[in-house]
Image (cartoon, rainbow, N blue to C red; front, side, top):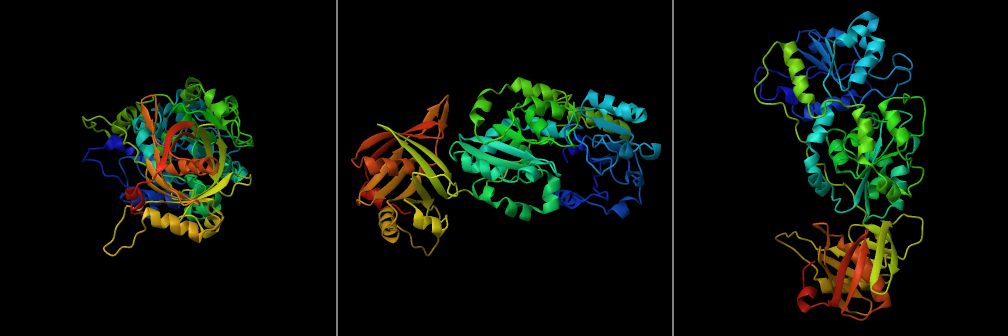
Length: 524
């Protein structure tokens, strides 16, 4: 799909898709093509006619049954791992003579590769295949690089804000991060402050297909409930990678795409037989700091040198920014057609879907100073003790609500013809009566305004100034500020007062005053 823009605008080209039998993971690939609205052809029918050009993303399967000139496209970032029990031992998957030249027969008329070093490796396996090779770069990387300017758009869609987005990536198979360290996403979510970090987990399409996205979500439920994003395997993963601030990776291809973007890379590969020594991926992981425990991320990020990781990516990707242009020239030459006059340009990646679940119950750590309160929020299931439990009423489960010291709700913006709504004053009073263990009830009215009521009965207005940093205006989740206010009022009940609230490393000025009658009567 990333390659097809080379034919954009050409009414002479008719595109058909078929699935080569033999893969355990192919059904989801075909489903992605069908969701795009493309025409698919059953394999048996595809083998009954001839074609002007055949594009294949893998040399595996009975490609020889398809009649027409075949082009083998780059698949993944380089050739870095071998798959045991498949083809020839110790050969890189994708550069295996058992598939590239079975019985001495050439699988393809052209082997499109991403880097000259891959031609050298191919020549050592099959000089005849190397003679048909062309270095065109990587079309998937082309699309990723073309979409870099949409980074802020992707982060907005994910709700990242000023947080650092840490992306974990897992390939497939027994040596993958998900197989070796299945609890790592949830462990990180429990140890990294929610207002400082956002987490995402990119899982290889084969694992989505093998397990099923539903079951995968169930297995990862503790992490997803804690706010970890699970991108879909087609297109969305790449948008999330662009949005990332750092990447924690095993030996899968995604790490090299992250390196090409200059993202800090943290190694989480525990070794084994799949990663080939001396490959670009092996060199990248050898040079990267290793994640043995969730702590120490800040030091790793501070020491990051973008030019260093990009140098490793350069060993896997040549012709960056030129892949579609070079591929168009090669493919149209095989078609014996003149290319359209308009340039071939990569299609920008669509925005990812927002998180399916966000935490609604937090274990909150508080540090109160003379005029400052520092807040760190973690998922409520964290084992360590906390200053208090803060819970979003109506979103978290009742068990958490019954244990909360701070209960809050976000004002509804919806309306129906027949509607009953609480006032801010009424809901806060009702909540404190219904939950005797709750010390503070609050309503978030906007990113800049909340209203709180304590057990003393006082209804207070909380006004939050955004933080201005290097030309940016930074907003925080007002619920985090409410935790600071809850802690402050327990020690300093007098108002009006100005305090400084530090959330996620950003400082926000907060003013507490008695709430006005109008604020108390606001609908929530």
